[in-house]
Image (spheres, one colour):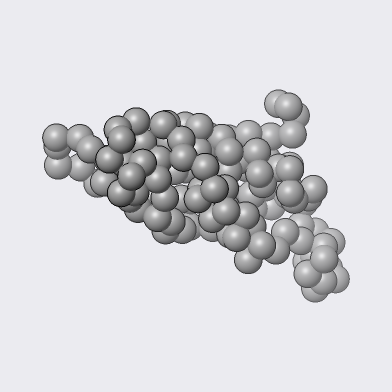
Length: 122
């Protein structure tokens, strides 16, 4: 299976359990891997034969900003659902959603959830 990778997509959004997270918002960073058969696009050099990563990025941004979730697990699931719903070539999607400014009293790089969803699991 081929892969389209969107790495380190930075989105300011309003997710979190605490009220101040929903009010002030914070930075989230996403890595999204979309798995599909891209052989026709490779052969034809035709944009219609692939998943347009610009459109996928816009879809991810929309999903991350149109709702406010308590859990990054729920936000990651919404991103995965969107990719599978909007891009028929996508066979599966991996979403790693990072929260570098989580309100944790510790010195850390980020906390994250990493999920993989596929059409077969629907």
